[in-house]
Image (cartoon, rainbow, N blue to C red; front, side):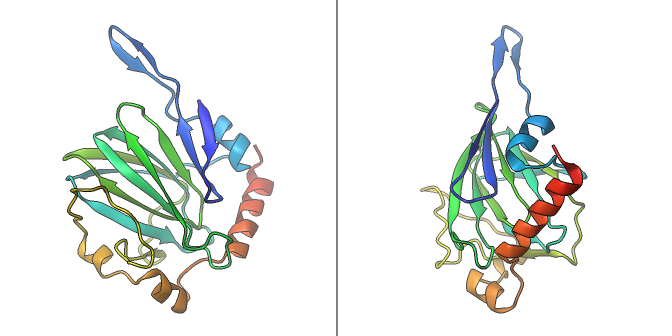
Length: 203
């Protein structure tokens, strides 16, 4: 597989090698050892989540308090999405920047999102099924969100898609409001946590 860094530090796109034959296709969808080579530590998969979404469903922008935060390895089992990685780390050189990565059940690519980054996606087809490998268990007291339709953030959704948000995501603060409220992680804390994980887990 090929693992390529995104312009937002701490995020990578994983492109697996596909082996098709008359029966279908085979691939390695996750390699902890290969990922550790680029991330700097092994991902400790503590929880897996699956979401099934209608066309236009927008989930996010979500993040968790650091430490421990929650790293995510996101891939599509059926359908397709536009996946968004958002730099919400106060003090980061790319604070407020985001990257959009198309993920689908044809190329079978994945996105790795480090602790401290924001994550969201928009489903492009009905019954789109997304699998998340998570480095920490869900804790509602430590989970937060940023309004995905915040005009200052400026996430660009695909043409012709009407966004469908949960009540919680729709009521989330803007990026500026979250920063003013002290909800966002700092870039320095994220770097410190990454160094801690590298020293603790190694490759």
